[in-house]
Amino acid sequence: MANTRTTASSRKPRATSRPAATRAPVEPEEEFDEPEVAEAEAQEAEAVSKHVTGLLCDEEIRIIPPGAWRQSWQRLLNSGQVDAFAKIVLHPDDYDLYLDIDPTNEEFGDLVNDAAMRAGESLGKSGGPAPSSRRTRRR
Image (cartoon, rainbow, N blue to C red; front, side, top):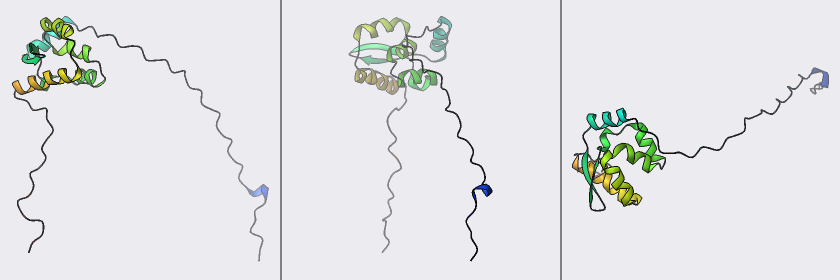
């Protein structure tokens, strides 16, 4: 039987490993201050979509209905920037009242749900399709 071993000289040379990549140092994220809402942007938001009222701890608050929120506003809310979000969606005259009330997350969520209901929108989860009226197994 022939020798099937290969000699060292017939092997392909191994590629040398790449040098370690140098990464730029990660800078800590800056704390997010409330964004400056341009007066024109606030007026546009008010003109484009009327505010509806909702109850926040038994106080009437005017808020832009959830269906009219911009995605950038929603990202503020999802990232926990509730005060910055509120400054955009609440009526400018009601923002100070919101700060004075200092609501919990649950109370703020109740305001949003109340405003959505009054605007004729549904924020709840879909009930899903109705179950079939037919029996699963035929006889």
